[in-house]
Amino acid sequence: MSDPIPLLRALDISKSFGGTRVLHGVNFELYAGEVHALVGENGAGKSTLLKILGGIHQPGSGKILLRDRQVSISSPNVAQQLGIALIHQEPLTFPDLDIAENIFVGHEQHDSRFSRVDWPKMYAEAQRLLDSLGVALDPRQRVRGLSIADQQMVEIASSLAQNAQVLLMDEPTSSLTPNEVGDLFRIVRRLREQGTAIVFISHRLEEVLEISDRITVLRDGEMVGTKRREDAVLDEIIRMMVGRALSTLFEKGEATIGEPILEVENLSRDGLFSDISIDVHSGEIVGLFGLVGAGRTDVANAIFGINPPDGGKVRIDGKQVTIRSPKQMIRMGIGYVPEDRQHHGLFLPFPVSVNTTMAILDKISPGGWFRPKLERQLALSYCTNLRVHLRDIAQATSELSGGNQQKVVLAKWLLTEPHILILDEPTRGIDIGAKSEVHHLIGDLARQGKAILMISSEMPEILAMSDRIVVMREGRINGRFERKNATAEAIIAAATGQTISEVN
Image 1 (cartoon, rainbow, N blue to C red):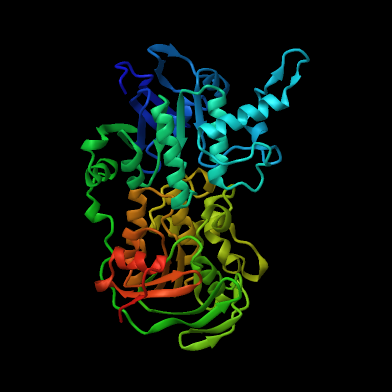
Image 2 (image 1 turned 180 degrees about the horizontal axis):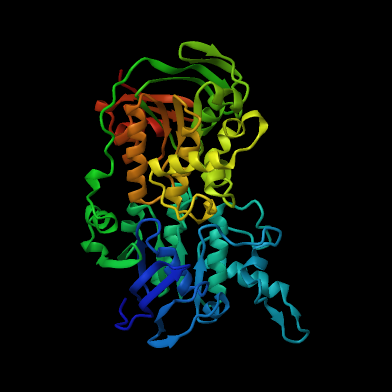
């Protein structure tokens, strides 16, 4: 950031959609050779600002300066010509083309003598770009089958091929493993050293504090303030985002723990997990922790009947059951909030009312006659109780923020009146304020006597919300901890196989 003049400036930017104000008078500066993080709750306006800078949306008012010259970024094409590239959360690649074709799509390398694609030159240049990023990929490899992380590297290489000086990165780490995040950050640091200006959006504040030079906070479409990384404190950033301190965001509250409701004994499924024994009591939250590939979701899928187990016993309310299907387990009183709410928990184009009631079709269609008024009444009642922020119960679920979509999934299962809830990563991909609301809701459900099995990869969440913690590693249980004795160090040790820690 040696240049005293910002490379890119957004001045007094405002934007509304259908009468709803999304941005109001936002000012944002980006210097060459810096990583500038943009943080805020869902709905704060972060992605909208990035899409304005990337030419997808046009501002309602305000102006944008590039190298101190006012520009009109009327389309992504124009942004590309100005040296601005937007890296989306889900990479926009062509799976049936190879890596080099994806890097140069729309601006292929041509042989000037014959006006045709110069394939040797294009593959050589693609290899040079990949090498410059330190990425071990073959430019002739098809993109189909590449990991999300590798697809992101292809998109970054494509932006460099177009001489992009500004990279806009919208939640680039949301689907990455810790190792993949480390690789991405290595690339980001290399680009920063080369003078590239980077805007970085993430809900993971520990990543923001690790990678950014400056941090700007948005709240309700307005800019709250900007902090240099060396002056930033996590609790202060959270307070700027949500208006309250970190200590208030993980409040589980006390619940009366009763008799065992769900008992799993020596559960196994060939090739996935074996000898899993877990019990969950009424009013209790049992946290299930493990690293990627530990088998936690496989266990949840088995208990819910998606992939029934090969061996072991399951008892519900003391009675042994043979697991056959999710429909059967719903009748037994189990609700399952899956990890991937967008693909496995919701039909995003459908109205909120439909998504909320889809698990109780028999109740809203007595005698085989669908009752739309009853559907709307039930959906509105539960969404109101869970404080789902929406314009109308009939609006498309895709229009809601991530946190509100998660509440709709919870409402759907609460309508089935379960006494056992399996929650797989219940706050993944939602902002810190929405996490707090979901945590309060989970605590309320425990106080109502629900038995809750909660899978989470987030250490603060697992420590704060769990009465007991079970740790899995490579398909087996490798540690058990009571709340009062659980520490992050002991849990990570069990998850990585350094030791087997069991406290009863």
